Amino acid sequence: MIADAIIPLFSLIVLGFAAGKRRWIDAVGVKALVAFIFNVAMPALLFRLVVTSDVAGLIDLRFLFGHISAQFAAAVIGALLGWVVLRQDAPRLVIQGFGSSFPNSVLLGIPLMIALYGERGAVPVTMIFTFNVALYSLVTMLLEVVGTDRPARRVRPERRVRPVALATTTARAIAGNPIILAALAGMVVGALGFGLVPVLDKTLGFIGQAGPPTALFALGASLGVREVALDVRGPLGAAGLMTMTKLFVHPALAFTAARALALDPFLTAAIVIVAALPVGANVYIFAQHYDVAVPEASSAILISTAISMATIPVLLWFIL
Image (cartoon, rainbow, N blue to C red; front, side, top):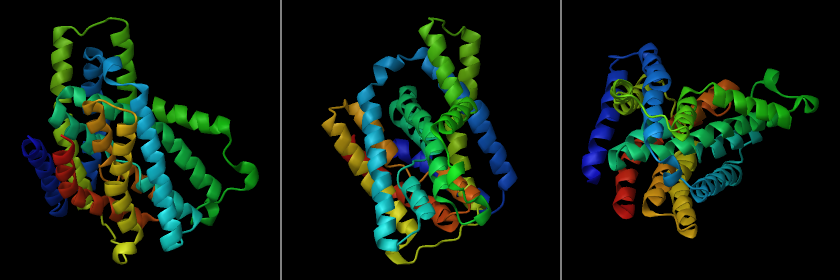
């Protein structure tokens, strides 16, 4: 079962990586694919899924609490390792903690859970993704407060982010994310008792089927076309520490939280699998936007994705 689910998924990532390296698809093409995934395919998939699923029966507050606890602990441990081992400055510590705890939930997590559990597997990953988008504003606040490598972007004390600004940023991030809006719309439609007429159900299903395989191909292609500057100065490099914390420490914390909260086998698998995913692409986006630890972030994404092809199957063998 594990091999049947995993091999096709990682094969698509490898194929996408090869296509990007050989320039069968360029950065513009990858950007278009990702736009299709985030704006069309995944929203259609998740809206249909949430409308037709008993979301309340699949998710409980213990699951979200377990995820939040494990993610926060992984971020703190990642930042502490960056401080103790590498003596990083404050902006790099933020990126170090961010990359140590934020997974690639959309491009890899949703396809993986669907391959293992069918469509219901996408529900817990979507809940985690929604929460993580809300936390992006917290990362923004931290980077603004501590300053960045670019003097022009340093924030004076009187201009530091206030709670109202943080809440506004969070609301805008959620309102501007088609995947989250689709899931929320699905909850409303489902709660009102409206079903999907057959033609709409088939149309959304047809569009949504393109989401998971396209996401995997785009993930590989994005790594292939990117000029990644490997910055791993031996095993104690920032990218190496970030990868180690994300792929090993974070899943262990998630499993501990799941056992402590007595989650059922499905939610236990979901919280651990998401924690075991490689570093998410948004870590690189934040690093590039603030000009902080860009080589380390891009290296960690590439390295953790490659290593996860071995670690995730082993992890699945233990928990399934």
